[in-house]
Image (tube, rainbow, N blue to C red; front, side, top):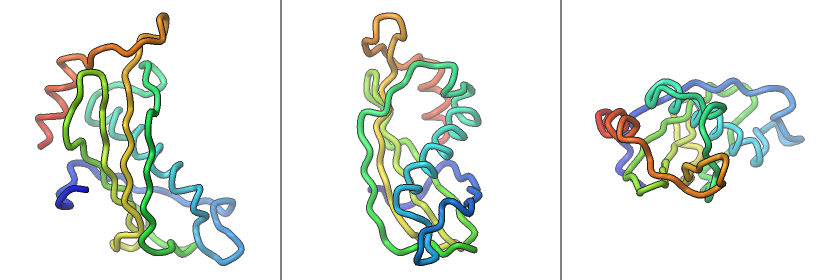
Length: 133
């Protein structure tokens, strides 16, 4: 993982159904938090919606640091450490009340929806992403 200097941050609302019998956010919900942050990053930084582009999630890793309590203020910080030809690795820090609760990494791969093959990341995406660093 990185040095913690994330480029983008988004607030996340937890829902009652996200809470397990221990009063914590269920571990599976963390992946949903990442998805919400990823959608925000694509919209706010890259300028496209994940709904409108062809990407697939190729990898997901989550390291849990501490539980998130039901009434916590949740944020997810995001950064793109490097770009591949068609892959977009993303690193995350999920925070509860400003404290690290988990770190994560995903890899999105840009695909052509018709051929279902990978395709290069557009140059305008590269410019918007690298301009945030």
